[in-house]
Image (tube, rainbow, N blue to C red):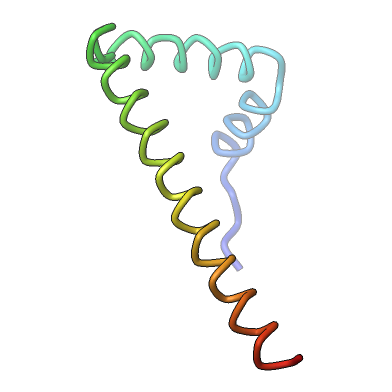
Length: 77
């Protein structure tokens, strides 16, 4: 089993402390500033596509469910 040296233990303790959490938050904010966010138009377009595809899949799966239910009812009764 590998033993930690004193600096590694201090580093772990620092990460678990309040300041370690604070550093995590500041690092997260810094990373979010680097993100390439989509434009408003691209967001609208992609959201519309997701809604349309979701509705279409819902209708398709509802149709398939109804067909299978009818077939099962005919086979059982």
